[in-house]
Structures are given as C-alpha cells and as structure tokens.
Length: 214
Ligand SMILES: Cc1cc2nc3c(=O)[nH]c(=O)nc-3n(C[C@H](O)[C@H](O)[C@H](O)COP(=O)(O)O)c2cc1C
Image 1 (cartoon, rainbow, N blue to C red):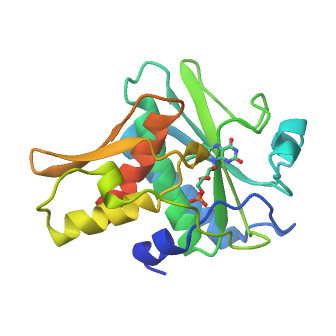
Image 2: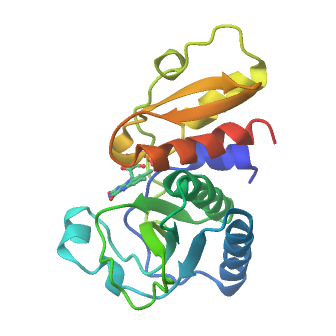
Image 3: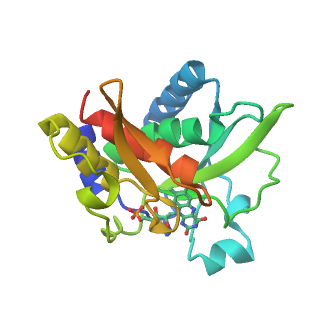
C-alpha cells in the first residue's frame, strides 16, 4: 500500500480484534518510531499487550474496545513546537501502521495517563496516545471541509492542491479541522487556529500535506 492509499483508506477505529500484532510488524513500527525520535527529539514508544490503559470508564464511554496496543506520544515539556511535532511524527507512524494492515485512533482524553509502561523521562510531557491494532472494521469516512474552507490561494500547483486534499483527509480532534493552509517561502504551511488540540491537528495535517511532495 502506498502512502497515498494509506491516506485515503485510513479512518479512526476504536474497536479492535483480540489479536496481537505480529512480531515482524512490531519490529517495523519500533524501528520507525526510533527514527522519528532521532529526527525530532520526541519520545514515541510502542507499547503492546497492555489492556489496562483503556480499561476505564472514559474509554468505554468513548466506545474503545479491546485496545491492547498504543503509541505513547510525548516529548520535552520545554519544546515550543512539542504539540505540532507530536502530530507530524505521530501521523508518520499512523500511516505506516495503515500500510502494514493495522488500524489506529489518536486519543487525547479517553485513557488512563499513569500507566507504568509509559516510560517518561524527567522533563517530558505526555501529549496523547495512538491506539493501534487490527480493527473490527476499517472505520468510515468523516465529513470534511473543502479546499476553500481552509485555503484562500487561487493559483496553486497540482502538488499543492493534492497536498490540501491529503490534509483534509487527516484525522483531527473532534473532527474540527481548525487550520489554514498558506504559502511561506514557497512551501505549503498548515497553520493552527486557536482551540483545543489544534496544534497537534496542524502537525498531523502538515504531514499529510507533505506526502504530496514526496
Ligand atoms: C489530536 C487528536 C485527538 C483525538 N482524541 C480523541 C479522543 O480522545 N477520543 C476519541 O474517541 N477520538 C479522538 N480522536 C479521533 C477523532 O475524533 C477523529 O480523528 C475524527 O473524528 C476524524 O475521523 P477520522 O479519523 O475517521 O478521519 C482524536 C483525533 C486527534 C487527531
């Protein structure tokens, strides 16, 4: 599956099969998480076989079922770009997981934040987690904004237009898509608007946008 196909087939999935992720896939995801940490200075960690983190009222209320694997998405508290980077690099892992036949859901609220398997170092902040596993279904498409809702540029290249299309297919908290896409020094930039989790969302959408130029 190409990255473009992963972008088009990905949807949030909250209910998973009770099937452990196979070892080769775990290794591939861990290798990519390590590469992302190296590049970004973030702390991205795959935890497998841990059902405790989603064993809480909030998770059940949020319709999460059989979540036993998740990425811890964390990084240095004092990094001014922490949330944006978490979105960008976390989504790199999400799309790889999709390419490997897995399903995912970004989660900021419906989980227990104090599990001993989330090994945070001094000075690090837990931003969110990403549930990952074999979904009961592949999810379904969400309602999305249009090009004109997020971008006021008229004369753009085909790649830029494709980048906006990919960004609009990205997950965002509460499906809010609160960002604008502009050109800065010849490069498309996804700028977060004010709101909860919008900086993470902008980082996620930026990764999707950048796929159009890879
Ligand atoms: C940063 C972020 C945080 C999210 N937090 C939650 C959450 O706490 N609980 C939940 O059920 N879904 C959560 N989601 C999933 C969104 O609701 C979902 O991505 C959105 O509705 C769009 O649907 P899609 O991912 O299928 O395109 C989150 C998504 C993002 C990007």
